[in-house]
Image 1 (cartoon, one colour):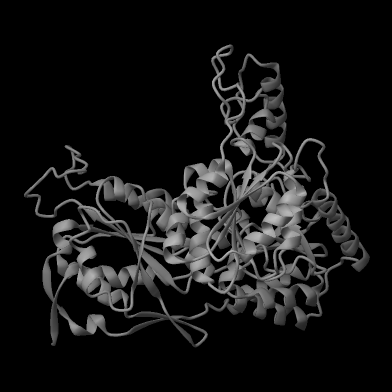
Image 2: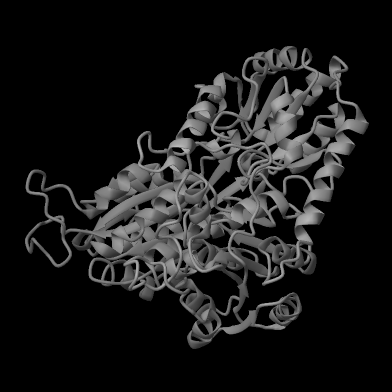
Length: 621
């Protein structure tokens, strides 16, 4: 057997450089490159390998470990999970900084490969700088924190262990049902140790993604159930996009006249003006979709994991009368809500189910005029919200309307947290698939700027916009600098509403007078953060980093800034001053949060009684 002597790091990179994925006969190189921040623990291991012999892998310098993993996840999401970046860090804090982003990727079923540095396997110099010592179990290190947030975790304590670990890592990364963060903890001494690796380990390896067909009996059972129902509704989740099933979804819905509602991950599966697209579902849903869901006798979930925002904390449906059919490649998600489950690829499942229902000449019981009116009513409400005028400033819904009207259909928007996801889910009008990039599985503050960089890296021919609140921007904006360094343009639309106003609204809606959520000075009179708003100049901050920047306080300034930003060739920030509390809410939705059962506030006590009543009406499924 022919071998080549390499360090473990050199072997890992050579292996990654030869991994490919094949979907429907289309072959794609799977690993684009490595994002990293060097320190002791990786600089003389993986760092040396990247410097001397990275092959075709591209190295991208991150500015925050969390930020670079968000960027890698966004890249993989925008590429339909067909291409990824690996991410490398030093030991200790450098590694732990990646944990939040690892969880974000795993919750959203997005593949990222994490390569944190780890303690010396030989233990000779223990304890080294930044080493976590656990006296009761000396095998534990900071890298163990990745275990609960990884779909696969391993520690390479001998260089030859890389062979089996790398194959297992690729198995999970390329599996649509199992994918998420994969962590290979790499002790810093082992990274530099050599081994005679067999050459066949480095041969081109093609991971073929065979679409999983549904079982014939499962299709028969589903068709038998559906043909007895008159008011079905489809909930389209992110799995529709990943299975590239948007056209199949449109054909299925049209064939049987079934209205469609979209989750955050599923939004843009149908164009907003498709006659059967009733808009968003759940807590951040449209009135048309939420009313149809309450009246439905059947819910067909396609590629959705049924989060509490999708189900309005399990109050969105009439569980006594409604049945569920779930198409999902992940069996864990397919069985949720006591559904009749089809564990299959969404595209394959929809095609088979359409054939079965066509054979029995099924049609829903909806009147065309009813669905047209539901859609028209909601479209009119969006028009109203987009046109809201405020006397003392710019309303958030008006700003979004202007942005939506100005951007091109192929432009990509990226968002994750705050009040913007709710408004975007309800109001944003997407015309093309994968132009709505929302991280709402973890709703991780700080994802937006990093995610926009990753999306722009994945889609260099499109304009990519990060829609971010001032709170999220302050938490994490470091990859703005990376975008400038890489010459990858994105546009950051920063909504400045003086703090964490989404949670401020949630707080006040449950009996609070407002506490600790606005960016105000500490008052000498109250001793609390109730003084004046802090005057933060975000545009100036962006300019100091090298970006272009504009400030918009009026409609005219916003319109001009959007047009100017589009003409810029480097990353640009538009600071948009919006009025707090001008976001959307309601529309037959409810979200369960913990309200104190005992409080000295009458308002809190009343909020508890209202919450208890709602809990009594919600399902326990």
